[in-house]
Image (cartoon, rainbow, N blue to C red; front, side, top):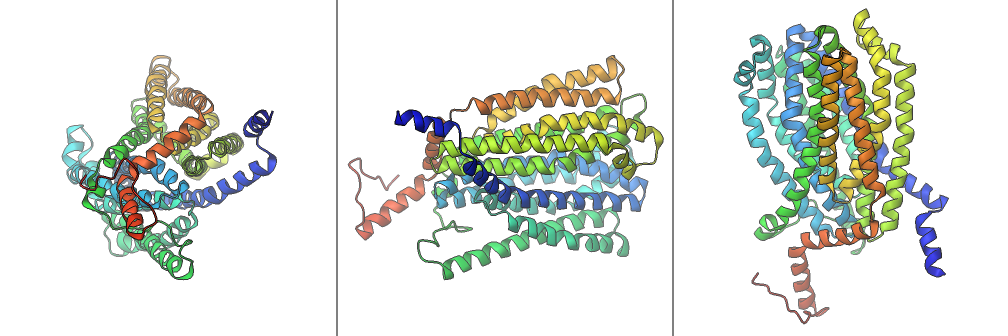
Length: 508
């Protein structure tokens, strides 16, 4: 009888529990949504400044931004997401040494990945000429990429630090550091690009300066927070994860690298597959019967989806943190509750996006263009993009749930199947075979999103949360091999504990 009551309570959470979970998700997600919105505005500043420089600079800069997203930023962002599973579960289990070691390993991994990416960016012009790009546009794009190479270093540090803080639910500093650095971004860009007449070079330089400013503010917060924690707290309260904990050589090059890579590589593939589909859509638009109208509409669609993506991004990050924390703490029922609440929020926000794209499509289109042909096509496709959002928001949120439960490989498989086995063939057939043009590409995107959300929600709702909780314990325990040995040594020296009957082989 008691077991039945507990099972019923576990299956149907009370309203206070739901409201408490909703508050926790909001506390994590709101600053992330605000940060994403600020980053969106910063990217718009870049595009506007390129347009002020001239049409050639705008074309070359747009090509460079697309190429850097495909070849660099998507890769670094995806690889960094591999640490989400470990860090969120480590903070949930209060296994702080694992979080710190994972942070260090991820930074090293991203710095190493930046080397080949930087070489590609440095030699972009010959690559663009090989695929028959306009020489003048290729030259401008290559110039931007060369001066943007330091941004790889900034992102190699920023991505892991953001995920590290986010994994323990500390998100307000992320928003404020991004906000303050963005305030300086516009005057820095104007100074370098127009006052000093550096043009596209100045825009690229201002981008990495802004990211280094964000990194500086973030590090200042982390070091000040660590100092205050150590001076104003009791010994028990101050046992939080240090930013960079001292560790042995084995701690940095041990077998735990395999655990991190098994999570990082699928995460990277999942992110890249989705990011690349939008670039694939833009390329196809250039081969339509009226490429000028199609490409202009594609640019508006990408700006629209980027803006709407701010809320799914926040919900995905919140879901990853909450699910990971609860699984790491050994509370599978709370992890399931976090998953259900975030998906419910995703469905709600997706309807808001649909209403906006339907009712405000004309006003939003006029923000970007006065061309009647482009505006007419934009008004046709924006409601389709709104329908895509009905699927995209729950799908993106569910990807966060999979990352929090250390299953990014499932997300990568679903993304590949949905976008490239369903969406891409249908988009090509509708656009080029059946003559739907750019509208056909949007219907292809809709089909991909529908296939993706059905598949991923099926996986989430069939999850055995008890099993995932056991897997989380095993994941954190594997990653904590070296710190566990160190803790046992300290316990023996203090006379608190003793070696178990299996013994502890320190020579290993």
